[in-house]
Image (cartoon, rainbow, N blue to C red):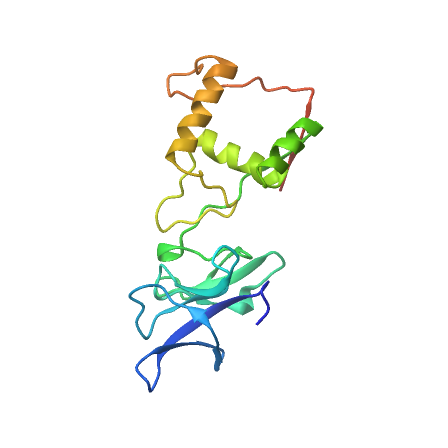
Amino acid sequence: MNQHATYLDCLLLATAGGGLAVEYQGRTLPGVQLPAGAVGGLVGVTNWDPRAGAWTFAAYLDPSLRRLPELDSGPRIGWSNATRPGGWTAPRGLVPGVAGAFVEDETEKFTVRVPPEFISVAARNRVPVAKLLRAFVADACGIEPRKGEPRADGYRQTNSAAHLAALDYLKAACGPPHDEAGRCVLAAEDDECEVETIA
């Protein structure tokens, strides 16, 4: 098994010994960790979890979800379910949620020059610069994907404490929010940033 691979439409099968095995396209995937309470008949995704240091299986949030390869096109792959048998596409690498729901990636690309001091901060915390910046963005915005609706952009706040700390930072750095909803409104133009909208 390739640690960079993702195995979709895996089926959990009961074994003769009373256990469970993960089957992918007619072959058994060895050494896969199963979630607590897993039962035979579940269909889902198996991939390498670097934090766990193991292969893990996660059942689809929509039990009827299945791949529809004939709809694959470039960076998007095909899916179907019981309510949409004709299918739809989603970004490659994203598994749709309940009823096939997901949030499209609507991010914009910003290129920001980062000084060596910030690179050192990231290094001391043993986190890549881009990952640290992405974490701050998610924490400042309080991004918590709705249950059953994964985000194609991958953003998710670290935790509630980090979210509150990010809001405290924004208040200290920018002053109080400038609108009634409590959002910080920043200037539209910034000579230090280059903005590129991704189609």
